[in-house]
Amino acid sequence: MRQDAFMEPFSTTFCDLQCKICVLLLGICSALKLTVPSHTIRGIKGQSLTLPVDYNFNITVSNIQIIWLFEKPPTTPIFLIGCLVNHSVVPDLEYRHKIALKPPNASLQIRSLNFSDEGNYIIKINIDGNRTIPASAKVQVTVDVPVTKPVIYIEPFAGVVENSGNITLNCTVEEGTRVAYQWLKNGNPIEAGTIYSLSANNSTLRIVPVVKEAIGNYSCLAENPVSAMESDVIVPTIYYGPYGLTINSDNGQKLGDYFTFNKGEAVQLYCSADSNPPNIFYSWTQRADNSTRLIKYGRSLEVVSEKVTQKTEEYRCRALNNKTGKWKETHIFVIMMPKVLQQKLQTRPEADYRKAQTISGHENALDDFGIYEFVAFPDAAGISRVSSWSVSVSDTAQGQDFNGTVYEVIRHIPEQYQERQEGT
Image 1 (cartoon, rainbow, N blue to C red):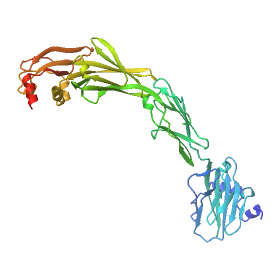
Image 2 (cartoon, helix red, strand yellow):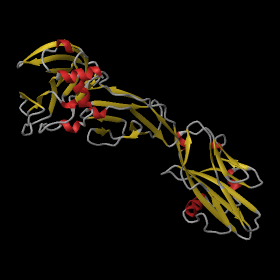
Image 3 (cartoon, one colour):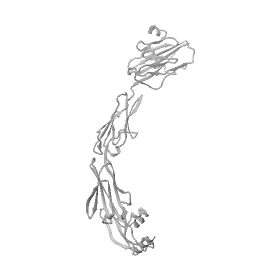
Image 4 (cartoon, rainbow, N blue to C red):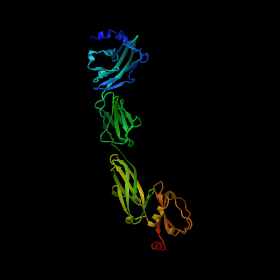
């Protein structure tokens, strides 16, 4: 059967059909209703795709004609396949192995999709009863290749010192069409901003300038209309610090820049800082008599109280990051004191040591008998102001507040108090 012979029973020519497509939309004729997808149908290259179409009518008909056309703008539509229901199907010879009708409705199956199959597919249905009623609609089809798992390449690979270099991250996929890229840090989307800039298609992320806050888990999401894949996480190497240099100890009591310890204890001091690389270079020095001497290298320092020559000694820790070339230094004062006063100080709120202490009047509590020495924080100029005078509890001292925290150190305990302590 010739194709033109198949078309003879119908008065509609291809030119007439093209014009009527723009006029006879779904729902104009209540006697014939045509239902097609309202959105673009996304197909995958190499796979089959079905365009679902339903139709129904409410009159008695003698014939139903189904025609599919293919339009690839700006070309005119071409005939794909047509049939009279309950009669033979007539495909275009060029597409006979490519397409097929899927009865009982008017759905069209496209086999083994290729990029050339992208375009508009036009369905036209005519029903013949007392009169011929036509309806038509258009379905848009796209064809894509799924994206493969993206890979991130980082430059420079060896790492960057903060505030002195830039980092570039490139996201690539081996396969995929119409790929869109999204960068994630710790699972959250990255937008262009103060330190982040993106290429036109978002495949490249630049960190300028590199700062400590840029450290995190970076990944790249590649997606297109038919697939989405996320890369493995990459953590850029950023060298920074040292920051937050502190000195601490497992024993004793820390009040500001001062550690108080019982005589006879071995004091273990630890120096630590936030830095990358973490294994930075530490050194310890002791400051006394307006001079400084190097004690040792390393993160920890043991101070043996029997070797402490003064009641208060200053120790300094310096941390050096060889990668950044930066260093920080901090210090603490170590105070060796009798155990009885150490216990007493620990029961007092720290706020009591944030202001100067004065003694006035007599104390009734036997535990307070003794000789006291007052030691003050260094002032703003870094000069330690230590009061060398001492008073007994029985005296009355009218004093003014010092610039810093004053610490009490018992120099002598009355014999009768010692005897009482030993007898209990």
